[in-house]
Image (cartoon, rainbow, N blue to C red; front, side):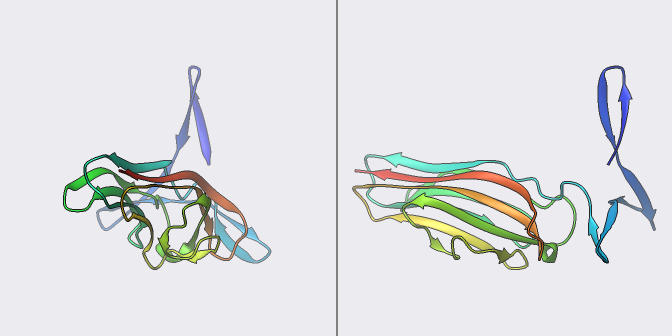
Length: 167
């Protein structure tokens, strides 16, 4: 990354190229033992805290999905009442879905869906859900990590809380 200082503020200088009228952000690359790797933060994932607490409805869910299209969605719902809370956005800021792997680790109630504690390719949508059968509290607290595929270097870490409470 290149930076310039304006007064007391440093600004990131990005390089763009124009390809037939479309502007593309170019990324610097380094040669790591014969393999060219992009340099810089390529994944931007916020902390996720999604769930519900509802004394009137018995069951529901809280879920996190990492889409192969480069987006994420976290939501919770009590069965039949509509969405309780949601958060969504873009996790992939540069690269393609084959460039990354994702892993969710944590403790508490085990979510259904994709394997925990295992690096998974982001070329397929991955999701994890806790489903509350009713009259209980279910909580999963974890860490979501992204890395460049085949590389052991973690490039993004976020906290994840999936929480459902019903009585």
